[in-house]
Image (cartoon, rainbow, N blue to C red; front, side, top):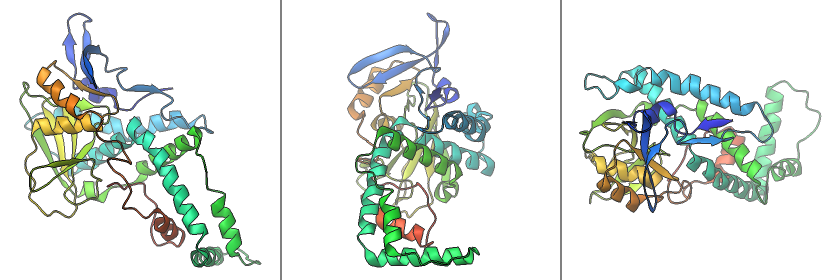
Length: 342
């Protein structure tokens, strides 16, 4: 099944009318290559089996349907209007756009590739926990209490070795592509149900730029950065990190700008169009797309292509104690979410 990682409707916002093919086309930019003039919005970010589940053949169509029905179609109703100066962001728009941006971030090939890092982090966490007898005893006791509270007739004592064996069974020493893909599909489903209060309660704005200085859109179009006091930009900052700013270009002249509700130690500056385009290239796995062939824009993109690799140089989880999080979940101290990032 062919699936769009960036929705066709969004890509069509960045097209031009090509007189040769007599259809809508995109200028496609790629590292160390000259811009290509006739990329189609129908196929530009379309990949086979992107949402395929290794053991559930029906899951791919189910996810594609949910993404269309729950996230894309509601936003498509007003997507083209966002560029009008008379358009006003209501609470309904923000709620729908927050979900749209969340899923745009997670449905990319960049996020899919990061699942290999996610699987390794989980394995490292499991290995740490199974070597801690005191923690295993706490988990065993909690599971026994839960069984009693649920009214199960418990006529045995759950031993530490039983818990250890169950956790050991989750460990994959050499994750296979199927296991990584399964982790990715689980993350997609988790994020469909996750509501990011930071984004929902953040400050939402719309950036405008003249047609002669357009925004581009990358194949990983939801991007973030932090601006320092010295006006230096750090790309790939997690949505919950202090001073983070998030962006989604929605047309060559319009870009959503979100200041999530996080700690802020400095007054944000108005981002320049070139800064958003730099971030688009930094996050891109392969391509950025534009409605014009502009050598100056291409030069900016070439300088920044591929700087961010999710889980490594951006949205890394080095600060994140996966073992403690797993223990907290098992002990009922926190719910599971898939949000994180440097």
